[in-house]
Image: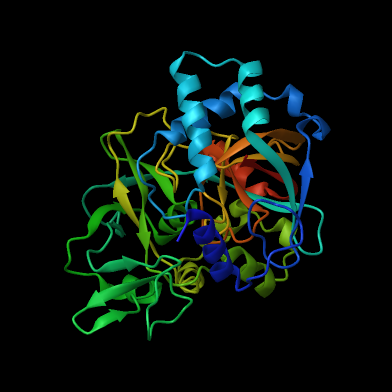
Length: 388
């Protein structure tokens, strides 16, 4: 099977739709999704962007190791664009105009519009930092776990007879593949005695935030910081606790920020335990003490993320490394708004990021970035740059 066919099958399996729109787009689209080809000169803000920053991120991705989380395979034309990017980068620093010319020469531009809408949708995420310990204590009783050895991740092409199709992972047993324990089972001892604990946090709310964001920093009692990267999940579907709380307590969705959700959970540990367990998905981590302090967290593509240049996309719809032009107005975190019109690189994914015009914007690390990320729930013009 060629790579182009693999992309079509992966996308069709993900969205349950096999037909492609009548548009002449060079990639498959599910029913109802429109792709409008644009000239870069038609894109407001294109000429003003710092394309050199986006090019540097794109070129580094072309030299990356295999990803942490499998995505749609790269088409052959993408590999050819990567070869040209590596050759250009090898000559030395690439300036803004040269980088802009690279993208204009080697990519076509396609505005993606989901069914019934003219724009896509973006949320924001960040790298949190919490206090923790390498040993369990009364102050730090909540464990984070390494990836279990019997955890098997499901890829789009995998056929697992007898295993619920909604499960993205399973447990390997002597009898074959079985559903992995859900969050409630794990929190009540399903993984005890396996030596999987890698460190301990103050409470389950901190762990929940780390699992939602997919990475983080943990400050240890001696002042040192250890980094955590995504290492897998139990495969159960993700449930948005913000949406559940909004419905239960009649809170308008636009007012249900991450800050508000965390405050509600921190105020009542029993309530927090019960609400968090509604999300059966459970994320495992690996420690990465080799990452420089100034480096961003490692995304699904296996590369450090860059604030306001890296995005998470639906990995069943798009390949990692894809350049995406976005145009949106989002909160600046201080009470105002900021227009963000720039070239991004798809370097991450997430369980809640589903759909060809759905994205998650990496805002940065720490509480200030976290506050801003929690405010972002906004429409976005989503323009894919597809290699010619």
